[in-house]
Amino acid sequence: MVQKVEIVIDGKSVELPVLEASEGLNVIDVRGIIKEGLFTFDPGFLSTASCESNVTYIDGDNGILLYRGYAIDQLAEGSSHMEVCYLLLNGELPDESQLSQFTKDINDRMPVDEHFQHIFDGFTKNSHPMSMVCAAIAGLASLQHDSLDISDPAYRKEAALQLIAKIPTIAAMAYKKSIGEEFIAPDSSLTYAENFLHMCFGKKGEQPNVSSTLSAAMDRIFILHADHEQNASTSTVRMAGSTECNPFAAIAAGTAALWGPSHGGANEAVLDMLVEIGDESNIEEYVAKAKDKEDPFKLMGFGHRVYKNFDPRATVMQSSAHAVLEEQGASEDPLLKIAQKLETIAREQDYFIDRNLYPNIDFYSGITLKAMGIPTTMFTVIFTLGRMPGWITHWDEMIAAPFKIARPRQLYLGEHKRDYVSIDNR
Ligand code: SDX
Image (cartoon, rainbow, N blue to C red):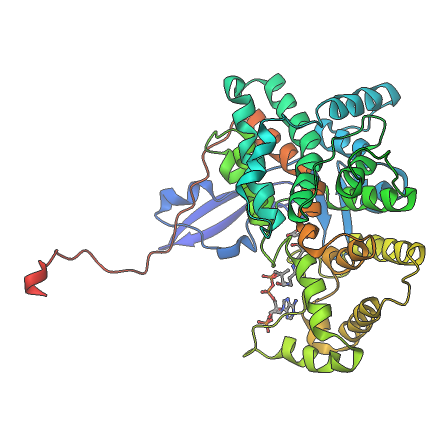
């Protein structure tokens, strides 16, 4: 096993230690290289590990995703989002009493303070739900401000429970606000996914009436989105959290980062793309646009920084899509036909094969969510809901150990030092 590497700087041999991973690539520890008068350079962090972590591991070449060592396809098949939240936060699967207590702890915290709900009054009816959710998550700090002690493990645990518990309620409130309907309170008799669907689609004064197929599909969607190593939004949570801000602020920062169409906003962008393509006869034209370097158009839902084969979550999501479409009697959904044709083309054409551009999780999640009657503007909100346990677990993992504020350096290419010239001499 390689224990160190040697580089030569101005004729001088410099040894850098190699740190060994339990899975995947080892890392060259370059922390000492600044003493040699050099920075490392890696915009976009293609080859850079930003931290050490025990939470999630992705083998991009073999399409493997492990949450605390458990494979995503096994968790999607046999676990529940509550159990996965417990697993991510605590590192081990719960026994029955632990799961029951954790579920109660979450259930008890789902209601949102009556007065706090007025945060939504500040938004116009056409506001994107993600803008409301970002604001509401940051606003949760106002309900805890007298006890924001991030060095206290008990406080960090309470913050984790609060965020996992309140995100479905906040997400549903954003949806109800966007359709001009009254908020529906959480119902403690329902499961986590049932409650979210009830708070979105229930009507004031009516008994909950949630389809078991849809709640099972939604729970699986939450599991598939729960964590994914140091992706852009999780790295944002870590960077924001490294300033010792409160967890609600750090998570709100991660939520804002997730919104981008290159990241969590891709599921909404996939649906918009399929609608724009409109018919199978137009697919070749859009595939040509995707290949054209002069055209900014990309096939949304394709490609991934880490997966260079299939995204195991997309495989699970594809089967979920079929089950939901079947139940909704929409198995002939024209958008699904376009999606399937796109996937076939991408798997046959060199441009996509050479660049390892295969469907990622966002490609089929949009179709599944649309079949469930979820509006496209809520797709990234649902991604936020699913990813919450992952974000808060990475934040806690960082804060629980010694950490430094994240402060990258740069390759400066600007002006040399020059003297100020007063305006009448310019
Ligand atoms: C998520 O990181 C995570 O883990 C994220 C995520 C999570 O769970 O947190 O998995 C969730 O964000 C999934 C990705 C969702 N985004 C999309 O579906 C948007 C479309 N995909 C692309 O924007 C892109 O593939 C990225 C952003 C996902 C990855 O970008 P990279 O790794 O920086 O790759 P790149 O842009 O350098 O592309 C390499 C080549 C380029 O061509 P060349 O210059 O080599 O000729 O592939 C091309 C790109 O032009 N390319 C695409 C393409 N994606 C990359 N061409 C057409 N369509 C695409 N979608």
